[in-house]
Image 1 (cartoon, rainbow, N blue to C red):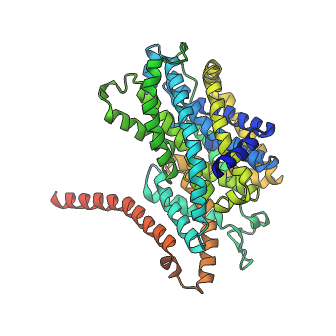
Image 2: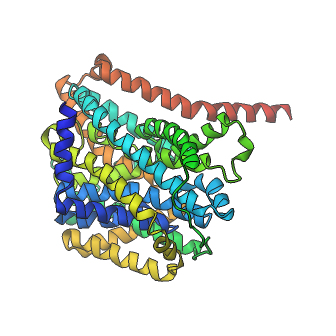
Length: 502
């Protein structure tokens, strides 16, 4: 009954006209961002962070969350009509979705993606409603040592977010930690890494780094690629599936939802891994696996349900433990921090209207997305004709205005521009910027809880090994390190033995 009464509170907050408006703007913008290849929720949320200063916390988080899971919906439109995924989580959808479109079933493919995502979003909303309070109640027993070990585990697990070299990912994490420690030390009152610049006494603002690396940096990268609009399938009639098609959609969508919900909670999991895993599962259990890649409806339903479920359940570790499972979740923490709020077990108790309003808004947002993505599919397809040479200068202008508005300081614009160039160089060097952002967020939290734990234990590090929760996270960290390191050692040994043999 507590969950039902809390959901009642959540719907009262989410249905507030102002929150409803910002929720609609979020899913609308998210859909547009998902449709346009080359943009993404990370860059968009980074650009819009300054806008959230003027909003109530619940309105800001509802809008930013809508952008996140709205982009997962929009990405399927280009994947099906253009064979070009608007979002990385929609890559798998191109395999069968575009083939269905070429066979004259574009409407059915779009309906399959929308209905599967709505089904997944509904189930994921209830999973969050029932699971998050339980996890938060457990997390209330955490002490400083437990939080420190949890954050270390989160940073190590963030290496999984990087698709390239482990060494590069570790370097990005350490760089993020160093950037996070800039400013005046609260204990010694001594400046750290300020380089004699008074404005750096409070450190670098999170929004400046995020907008620089992901907003300006992504724009430069996309300009260098020379992306232009492409031809698309224009016949998308028959948007409502038949009873036979609905029967074929339900089971794959349910399996994709379950798999996506589980993987979304894990650090480094997320929508991309969920969609690939769901597609692989469906192909493995199919009676005719040869149909996949040739227009199988299951190949659209399962991954679309999985990536939407993963997008939503990623909020569980964020809101209950303060642990971001993806770069977007790190941006959500930044948005909360800008409103003086901190993600963690106390958030649900201290700000129930924010948590339950967000949960309820997810279901309402998913309902809005079904309406936006099916009847208005022609409008979204027209977005593909927008010349990118006109789009990107507008993005750069918005970034500069947004950064300047944070503190009305031109230095912030210069710093964001420098980080934009750094982000572009990172991309060229195949260094993922996501671990850097997570290091920037979690580094100061690790330092704060490390100091508290050592003060309580009078400087004895044994406190990290005598507390069961802390010890558990340290063991998990060691397992993740072993998983990452052992293949490298094994390949190195094999190479050495091969050279000796020759």
